[in-house]
Length: 122
Image (cartoon, rainbow, N blue to C red; front, side, top):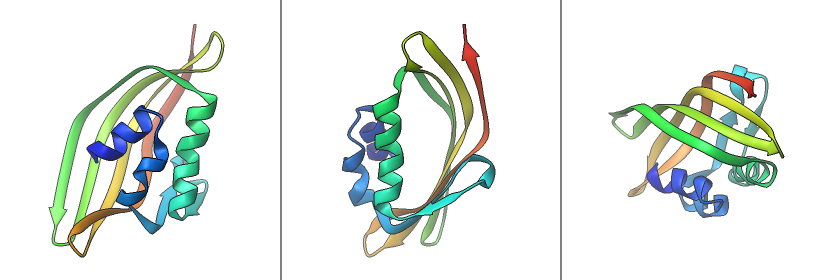
C-alpha cells in the first residue's frame, strides 16, 4: 500500500502496475460507475495528476484486516488540491483497497472511496 501511495503522490502512477491485478476494479464514489483493468485504474491517477496539484494531504485512521488470502486496507484522507489557478477544492473521505494473495505477492483487486465530501476553498 505504501508503494502505491508513494507512486501517486510523487506523480509516478505507472509505477503502481506491479501491485495491481490485471483485472482490478475501481468503483467510483457513490458507485455511480465502475471501471475494470489495471491500465484504466492507472489512467485515473494519471488524469488526476495532469489536471490537479495537491496542496495539502494527510491520512489517518489506518486499518488493515487480513483474512486468509484477502486483505482490506482503509484509511481516511483530507486533501486540498488545485485544479485551475486559484481554484482549490477540499476533499475528505475514506479510501478502501482490497488485496488478494497471488503466488507470493499481494495485488490490489478492488478499490473505492467512501464518504467523499468536496467543497471549494476560498
